[in-house]
View 1: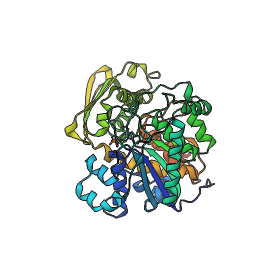
View 2 (view 1 turned 30 degrees about the horizontal axis):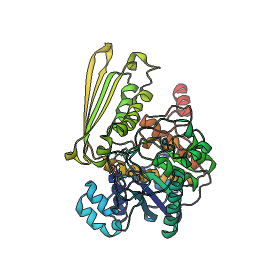
View 3 (view 1 turned 90 degrees about the vertical axis):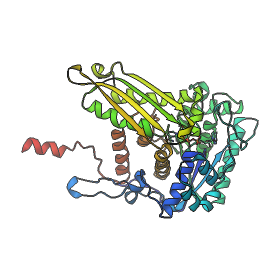
Length: 440
Ligand SMILES: NC(=O)c1ccc[n+]([C@@H]2O[C@H](COP(=O)([O-])OP(=O)(O)OC[C@H]3O[C@@H](n4cnc5c(N)ncnc54)[C@H](O)[C@@H]3O)[C@@H](O)[C@H]2O)c1
């Protein structure tokens, strides 16, 4: 039985708080793909296939042909930033993409202008800009955002919207009583409670309007009971936190492999240099703390030391991020993994990844936007754990441990799509296989 999914017709507006390196690399990429001057490499929704049924059936359609996703031809872009640069100027300054590509798309990119942001240096220290809203309290700021969103929808003739947070990492905020329910949260907004950050105000505005909200940074944002409950009340999907790219992506590829072969780990040291604006923001210890917590959470849940104390009881996990301007967006990361094998003999693995952060993040933004729109049309609401595949620090239901293993995350994502389209789930543990081998 297929789940009823509303059609993906009409225009989808993708709104991005934060129009920096990731957002402009994403927008430029979609425009380039639309003009057939580039390929959407790294995007599961555009290039991935999905196996259906039993292997001999050989049914492996493209995901976008299997499930009704918005067509990238029908996307319009908007967003907010503290700087007034349009998407062309911002992409140019971010220095990720070649000027020749940007110039080919200059006309379209130049029309995408950021709306004034909800921003405060109390939450992000190392940057400041002129394009910022002023209001007497946080509720008024949310109402300003709501007006922006409604205006954008009308002016651009959008049928549906999604919001993906691509703005800077905010300082670390501990969950507290103001986050506990929607009443305390609304009261806190009126009283300018310091534990309500700008990203929470954007998320609140989105959820008030029933617009799916995904969080690409490690900030708490919608990972609080007040906004989880609002997402359920307004039947709206939410997801987060922190796009899984670069070094952490590698970690969640390598760690499950070592664990699968019962190889022990003594220590995992990760360091990197990057020189983009994100790196500058993370140079502030308070923003770095948010990122560090997100990156550190990965290993514990993959290795499950409580179940395997002989192998992973005391893994020394260290993470460093070093702001180094000459590198720009072309981050270089080093991992040193101290492992041990048969009879406790020690070995080492070194990974040196010369990556491009925004090139890895852009397809994640696209997939999240399209899948969140799908989820909304399929009547799904609350935390979308099946999208954990895309996050470093996946948001999970109260009391549940997030799943970090990339391969388990992929299985969950694919099975969700199969379920929505009424196909058999594939767990790679088919009963018929065992019946056949024991009865041979
Ligand atoms: N690039 C990656 O691989 C990757 C991976 C995981 C997470 N992230 C996160 O994605 C976010 C964006 O990364 P980036 O490299 O594009 O950074 P960036 O610094 O180039 O862009 C962020 C933009 O957000 C703007 N901004 C900050 N606060 C804002 C606010 N309250 N409202 C509106 N705009 C605001 C800044 O002015 C800036 O232009 C960061 O939080 C980063 O940590 C990136």
